[in-house]
Length: 265
Image 1 (cartoon, rainbow, N blue to C red):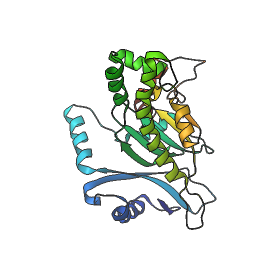
Image 2 (cartoon, rainbow, N blue to C red):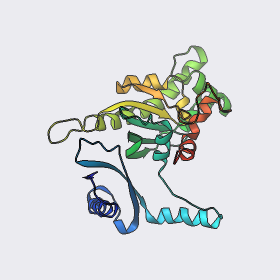
Image 3 (cartoon, rainbow, N blue to C red):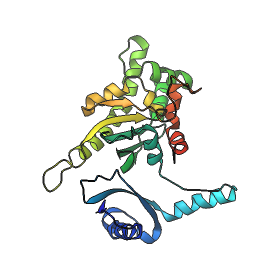
Image 4 (cartoon, rainbow, N blue to C red):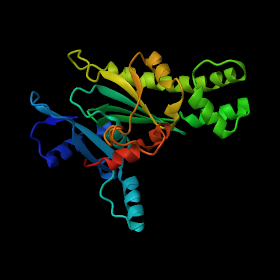
């Protein structure tokens, strides 16, 4: 959303309420919501804000769980905000990014602008589908299936392993279709003047299943946009000074935790 520069917090929250009917499938009374200002620019009369809305019932259930566990809860935030805090460059010239969290059971998408999600969604495409198919088709153990994905993945192979490429390609293609759908929708949005509103500059992959060998190149070829694996450590340490005692591939599973640890820094 955009709000006039200088609008108070209470006024902004009321303006968000007015937008619920057109933007959110739950009423304000059943929701908790907040916002962040996305990099205000001196040349603009409006502030662009990133709004987060969550079902009140779910938020209260989380709060109650923390209270019963004796943990003092300071705040709650959506997963995409934590991940973006870790992998976003946080620079004024950083392009709008399509963040793809390719996990075991599902894939989360977030369109990120200067470190703030302006859209999130989830699809039921995950790496476990590949693992199960590899175990069945190639008679592999779960460990061998993971190794195949990480070492061979989408790179053509010969002999017995050639069938594995066929297996992983099916899920990779389904993922690429979703990436392309999200990317092109946001990249081609235009305002009433015909100007592109959210030109997406790159795709960033994170999540344990993003370790699939050849996946960045595969996605880049389908979307026709720069695609890279996210670096969850870039705001934590310089590798010249300290190397975290965790495998690079494994670190992709902890982007949310790293982002939470960086909150307030």
